[in-house]
Amino acid sequence: MYEYLLGTITKIKPTYIVLDVMGVGYLLSVANPYSWDVNTSKKVYVHQVVREDAQTLYGFVNEEEKEVFLKLISVSGIGPKSALAIIARADNVGLVNAIDNSDITYLTKFPGVGKKTASQMVLDLAGKFVPQTLNQVAKVIGNQELGEALEALEALGYKGVELKKIIPSLEAETNGSAESYIKLALKLLIK
Image 1 (cartoon, one colour):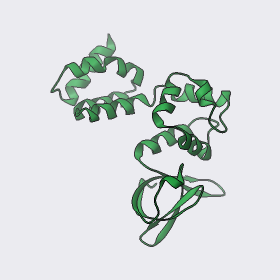
Image 2: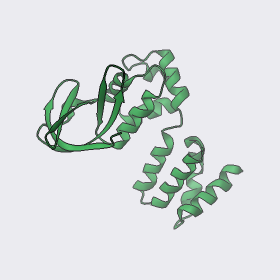
Image 3: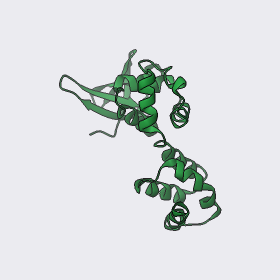
């Protein structure tokens, strides 16, 4: 329902912050409340969870953190509080690498994550973070068209592992449009 809120942080507590948006104080459960600064204006990305007995807003530093949270709560056995605990204790790159490399030992270090839940995380999420990471890499190196092509290929159902293998061949075609990258990628993926 909400994408983000823009306001001033007025209160920090051990599990949440309060964001004042035009006179309305929103209580946002966040991963690391003390990493925020009081009396600063911030854009906080949010996700609302509505349950029978509660409505809760979860806040995130950026869109990437929000996406990791959303993917984590899609795993059976991981609720919003567990997902926040995982985000609070891990850097996103280490978490994604652990999932993609089936590192169960690393994943079981998080609170409330046993071997069964860690295995489910690997099963459900392996390869699903890679396209976002590849897209970000493409944008960082200044190739917006390649990033758009990767997004389109992901939407077509190609896995990050498959896309990662063809990135060098796609990069060799400089000054390409998103359409030409997609055509070349499809040729490479069909082989």
